[in-house]
Length: 322
Ligand code: FAD
Image (cartoon, rainbow, N blue to C red; front, side, top):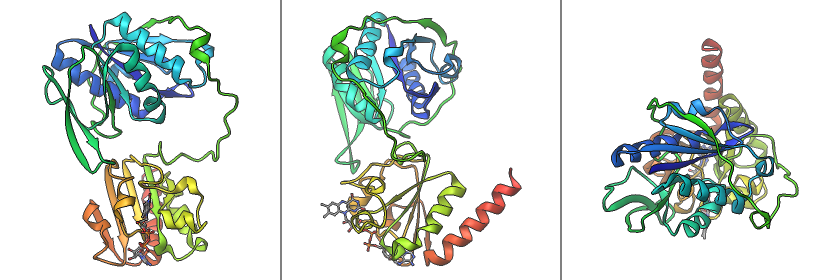
């Protein structure tokens, strides 16, 4: 019996959310007095998972799994869970994981809790805190099935180093045609830039920027920080920025480590998309702007004065610390 964790990777490297998921699995395994087994599909170096607490890594190397396929990946993870007699399966809240989680839960006859916000409140009975209502409230849910599937929210637990052996073992699941009833034909990336969903830092701007011609400084600030750019809904509605950048209840969710909001009022529908971001910095001329209530750091002032100064200071800082 172990805690099983699926570790997502991209181009052969584990994503940060995978390392956070391993850290989380380790915390549960410690509570349960058991070990952590990670499943890696065409993934990175197993020893990296050991740093965060994986005792064993089941390595699946299969060209058919080069592109994500929810049915096939869910089957791989369910087979690994059965092979390991895992009672808890830890996933993330990535788009891929959200797609797979119900399939895995059905296969394992498991209860599934998405958007998990913290280590379990208790193991027996198994109770876990999770975000609900677009992250505006928490619920504590008891899972009473023998097997539990959890979707860990990004940045909910953080990275915790727990040195473990991470013994790598080849794992060869049985995959048949039914696993590939859908196939990825091609992938057209809208941009080579880091996406809002994956970005560690997001620089976002709103109607306070007055017009699309003023986005140069937003892009410059994003460049110097290695950040993705985002915007509020009206900005994309007016065509100032592409719709892919629209953040919020009706746009994309952001779970970055740093979210900088410039000239955005902080309407509830916007905040719904950024509640999972860790540190929020707000720049706004209006000290009464609602965003300041949700902010960790706030600058009351004109973006047209502050942002260029911030860019210069960051450039100097980077040059001094290169
Ligand atoms: P504004 O509300 O116009 O705010 C502009 C801000 O810029 C102000 O706070 C102002 O003080 C500040 N400002 C002005 N000049 C400067 C300056 N020079 N320097 C610094 N600050 C300055 N919105 C979303 O963003 N995402 C959503 O997903 C979303 N979904 C919605 C769904 C529904 C059903 C509805 C009804 C609305 C939704 N909205 C959404 C819209 C939302 O209610 C707000 O209208 C919108 O977020 C406001 O965008 P904004 O903050 O860019 O603009």
